[in-house]
Image (tube, rainbow, N blue to C red; front, side, top):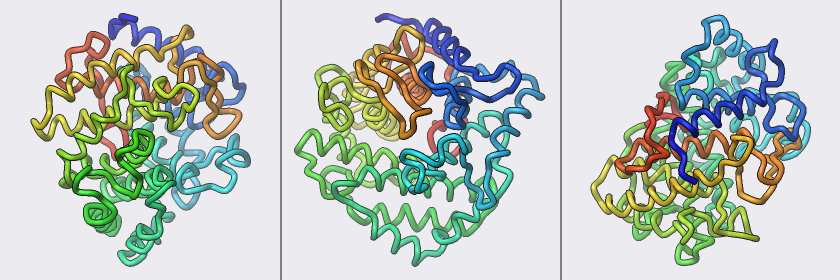
Length: 371
């Protein structure tokens, strides 16, 4: 499919408007046409996708304030956000660190920044991690083997919250904890031959993909703080090996039935670091540009008839809860945001791709949306 960026913008924003849950309440969105209830995740994805297209500029001050208030009502006393619609079922019932309230909170912080606001309450939740000995002990006890991608999310969520607390709540101890984390990651469980963390077999495409998905969650912490990325050239070599013959970056981590029809996560987990590293070094820049050009074509193919994007083509995907379900070849909020972000990142590289030629709008905030 040969889309122009403007066509992509029009169809994507139309899809997001179609999932507005209540016209009388700013900020309420459903995750897909398959579900009936509004969720905070869907609201955050709507904000972040619209922001990438600079579509929030037409909101009135009152509309922005109302949307911000909608998020603020769901902030708990420890600083984290919770959604009563999804919190008692699925992945979220035990509030795991990799996908529970800290995960949701990281998304809402970016959404708030897109709306011109910050979290009202400070993060009491972070007290344990601000102690140097506790931080190192916690890092050492993570799983650096088969479940390294879960570890990826855990460290990412804590790292984002610490960076945010430092930069927007003036928390000096949080800043010290970030430095401890990044210094530790630079020295432990990382291979100087591959630039990748953990004990998985990087020669095996499936395990390599799994390990890169974990690393994706730590590199943004380095990039945001302009902290030296360890063994960056070797990491580029490894990242380029994750692209398959379709131009996607899937090897079956999420789609065992049809591995080369990659997930939104598999794709951005290689696209994001390749784009950012391309800005930091000339090493293999032509190879990166060629890989991103192929990737852009693949990502665009994941837009479906309703104007949204899918997590995986020809596969339904439930994001941990029934109210976060996208049916087969049905657009959903999470992949629409993530795949739009992939195209925006490629557009900010030197890669000449028609689909990505757009004045993308990035937000300076720890996590996903800065460049």
